[in-house]
Structure formats: C-alpha cells, structure tokens
Length: 238
Image (cartoon, rainbow, N blue to C red; front, side, top):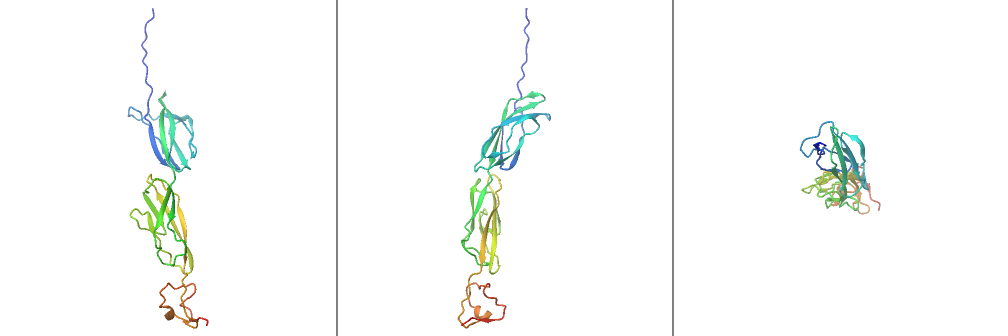
C-alpha cells in the first residue's frame, strides 16, 4: 500500500513591472524590485528580450546573465516611442516570472529662429520685432530658452531682441538658440546669420565740401563706408 507524500510547491519569484522615460541619446538604468517590496539579493542576474522598433537604435537582447539592466537608446523619430523589455530575473539560483520594463524615448527637440531680418540691419540698431523660437519637434512649452547674440524679453524667454553690432560697413552677426523642452530634453543648437551693413549715404550737393559740419545735420545714420570724417575734407565733384 502506497503512502501519500506531501509536496510543497514554491511560488516563483515575482518582480514589479517598471516604466522609464528618457531623452534620445541617453541611457536608462533599471532598478528592479520584488513584489514583496524587498530588493533582490546582490547576486541577482537578468536576461531579457526586446522588440526592435524602426527609428530607435541601441536595443539588444541579453541571452547571457547580466547583473544590470541598462542600454543607451537613440531616436530619429519625431514623437515619443515606447520600447518594451521582457525580463527574467534569477535570484539565488531561482528564476522569476517574466516582468516588463517599458522605456519611453523622447525625441531630440528641433527649434529654429523666426522673425529674422530679411535684409541688412544698420550697425547698433535694434531689429523692429523680437526674434521668436519655433519648436517643430519636442514637448512644449519649453522649460528653458538659451539665447546667444540676442536678449530674451518674454516672460518665459521664448522671444528675444536683437541689436546689431557696431561694426561699420559690412559684418555678419551670429544668433543662436538652444531649448530644453518640457520633458527636459536638450535640442541641437539653432543658428542664424544676420547681415549688418551701414547703407545710408549722406546727401550733399555738388561742389559742397565734406566736413564734420556739413554732415552733422544729417538725420540718417552716416555711412562710414563712404565717408571718414577724420580724414582731410574732400570736395564733392561738380
């Protein structure tokens, strides 16, 4: 006559599912926790599979045991995209139930500078309208607007005043803008070149001598590209 044997079944170890959000080009570092609320032991290892997504690079399966779950993911897409890892942990030789790690990859923001002058700007003058930030990719409104070559004027710094350099004749000013979007992702640097030129020539009558006195009454900016008032006075040809 057989004797019944009582067998105690052990439940598999269970981990919590995890979610992360990162900027394109950065790494996530998962910190798995057991459903019991206790951190896994130091000798816990992990293997995983991940489905590839077009436009996202940096994903790869781990078929050999890893002590950490971390990968750098880069997106060429224009919208946030979720990547799902299916992970199995091994704690002290005991395998866990599969759990998931979902990583949302935010795209690199894209910004351009709007409101730029269509022609030349006189040296030392301020352009009549503020420059604007045009965000085509990224979460808005941005957290930060970082202007170079222009002075932010809006409450959130999204617009800026541009004042031309005091260089006489012709020159080129550089204005740049970089933003950090609402998700904390930093854009590439947007740049623009603004032409600076002193184009207004004084109006003098034929035969009139060019001196500081003869041009002092001119209301328009003096075109120093044409006249240097520090040189010997010359006479306009008749």
